[in-house]
Length: 269
Image (cartoon, rainbow, N blue to C red):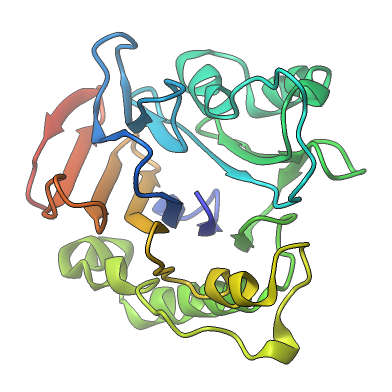
């Protein structure tokens, strides 16, 4: 998962609204979003190599997502899989704050990551590359890629601006899910100008490629877009659109979890 914009307002009808692109090697096996048989209540895509996920929800009203922190050449020996950070939160019952505090004590065992968790009330963020430790976020619009939260990389700035424009253009949260045009917000392959590129230790050509909201390259790129909404009444809306690779269903997969936690896959909004 390499680009996330999310709006949080604990007093709003839709308390948390998330748009995210997952960028990954096309050859890395993964399952599209669905309910997991081995962990009841979890709705997420699944990395078939390590078994975890990059973003998901639980029918109890929990949400989590992780992105890698880009630092080429730095690898933790025998590192734990970062996808389990998401799964561990979704299937558990710890509050956002308690979970992040627990993860912090073991964070040296992982390669660089950014973790967002939401327990239905509190939204938390932690990176093992930040000196600040876990934080609980207040009302606002946030952006995250492969550096720290709200690092002003060009695509993060554009994602946050796009999120604000999107939310301002609809009369209410339900309209976003009726229209569904928000799913196209991150489908922009425009690369940043060289002068605006971050310097993360990769080649200039690769830095250019990775600067786009929608990444396209021969072997690596944006594989899916996901939209998630968590509501005051306990409802969860979740939609995924697969872009790559070939062989997976390209259709948009919508889900709605009604208050009372009855899963209804393939529901048309």
